[in-house]
Image (cartoon, rainbow, N blue to C red; front, side):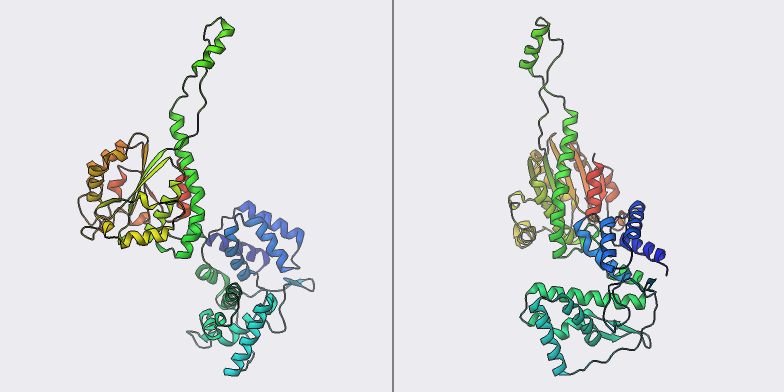
Length: 453
């Protein structure tokens, strides 16, 4: 594989991992590399990162893909590692897809050998010796991570096997050192797998997508923590765009005192009127959240969004429903944990469903009957849910009345558009009344906010 081919494949892998890399940025990277040269691998990494990475939270994914396409070692790394991409003035061929592996060096085995290795690892973590940790990670993968492949002679590696055998968390070192060693082990496993299966295959199946691309329905607790930071600026933008549109519809009020004062120069005749400046304001928002089992993971995101929106709008009233509607505005206090709030709501009998099955029609009807004053011409309505109502009555006339009572209405649906109107989905029927947008990740949420302009 030529350098140009590898560069193109590398850029495509970054895009697949969720990093937005344009053609111009790819050309900028080539220009930077042409000036800096290929002699040093870390310089190459820096040149690529400076030209292709736009956000700090994209850097971990970039580093993983870079290590696959521009590895520091080839094969088992016998004879010491090297960070040089070009040696002796000539390009050193990097491993191609399907490259065969050489014989494996032998390491002593047994309880004493394992104890000696763990002692060396403990010393390296205590001394914070990064080079020693990297070397021990390579050795650990070779000694404890090798597993049989599916085909004859095929070799595979497992980071889980390494961590289970070595148990670095039991060595008394700081958790940060343990995580560093685990990351080095995982990187080494990916590197070896890339030599056998090719970097493209490994990047597609092992490199974690950026947080913007993680589906809300499959997000883990750690993902939700990262999403919480990303949602805050989106909530500010949403509030700003809604307020901007509202103020654009409203003329500036007359400033009578300034108008009279200005008319003195024209003999008391108000030839030109003066108006008060537009004051920035915040609008009201009502949020209806489906918290049924079909969107249980999405519900965690909706609660985070409500927390963020409450700080940006003048007033936010939040309601949850399965088949009955319940106001939960008082649960969204500043500084509260969304995960804990969700847990409290789930444990509370007051917020349990009546029949245990999602019923949008019943929920909308109960909202209209009990909280008719929540929607006014100054209020925006946001519905969060998958529009799956178990083939029950949809109460479309009620929904239409709610839409007419609000200034604006939107519906964010966590399901892929291709699943709308399948089974018990009533997405199109509700979508004819409330503008419905597919919203499965932060990227789509950002696009929704952007399109409000």
